[in-house]
Image 1 (cartoon, rainbow, N blue to C red):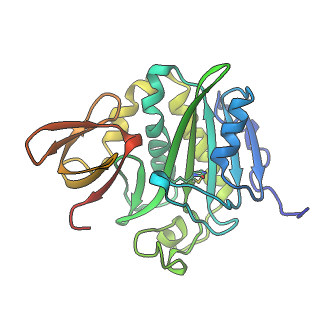
Image 2: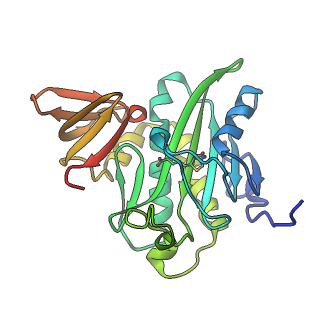
Length: 262
Ligand code: BTN
């Protein structure tokens, strides 16, 4: 057993949150926090569980990509939620908006969102989320898995150095993972636990979307679509005008995007 310290100890009882982070489990190392949260969900765990890891040995990104982060430098966590079925499509939006609001408190750099759920600063990605859902005996569940680059030095990772940044890179200073996590749990809970905030979630989130008005390439299942992003609907689906002039409605979970020319 390593005697590595849990930097997140005691966050459960802070800030009068209602749901998210009622129970927090920290691993020095795990395969993927999304898998840990899913297993807990299938075993009947109530919503609000947060699983955090200092290192993932099989961290996953969207579209079967891997998620790389050096040990103990960034934030890697998953939240288990049991929303009403009607709110399931909004789950991918919660993390993006909460991360953006959190990062606002740590840097002056404008924080934007790239559809469906990349968080960006200085033209680079600083956070991403992978939302997975399922059902257990107690009903539907969603696992929101999020990675936030806090202290990593992307320049030391050639495979992502040209596309990624971190809070430390933006500010020039090492940043407390505990303080970022604390604020992040607060912001996620503030959105999820209040009906009014769930109602304004899509409009607050879309106000930060840099994708609207841009020409993008989208992989939709096996199909590649080129078009102009015209907006999002009331559940966060992208309205994409394709080359033939048809308006397509794309769900966040299914696609990967690239700005044309990037
Ligand atoms: C993406 O941008 O492609 C999504 C990245 C999601 C990474 C996080 S890190 C914590 C959680 N566990 C995982 O295996 N993936 C998510």
